[in-house]
Amino acid sequence: MSTSSSFCPVPKEQQPINEYQELQNSWFFGWVKLAPTKYLTKLIWVGIWSLIVTAPLAEASFSIAKYPIQFGICTIGGSLIFVALAAIRLYLGWIHVKERLYNESVFYEESGWYDGQTWIKTPEILDRDRLIVSYEVQPILKRIQLTFLTLLGTVIVGIIAWKII
Image: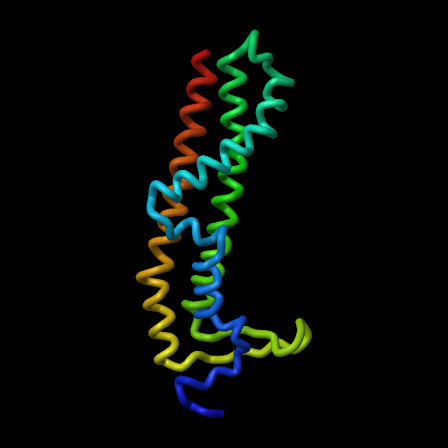
């Protein structure tokens, strides 16, 4: 077995650095790397499009003509579920890549699920991957966590408003 830092038996598409770059360049997972206003705009669009589903459901429970505030709270609350699901999916994708980059070893499949192997990263590759985690992936995960806190705060405000009315 070669000790060269360039030797890596892991197939290209399963190498953590390539998984990171693929995630970073993907349409959906790349949202988190956008400027804060553009990231927020994407999440707001998810919320707006989810109104197509949540508004009729809320209307079935609370007539907009008779209970406009309850209708609004239910519609927005339901819409936040879709935004939360999008944020969860973002988080799961990025946490997976973080773990693959941070771990000292890489599990990979040579040709199928039945022949998995483990490769121990060289110190150079491990250092590079951990730097990527520290300077690139951790801020992304913090942004998604802030998104969760914001959603939670919005839900709490909605619950308080519901109790008041």
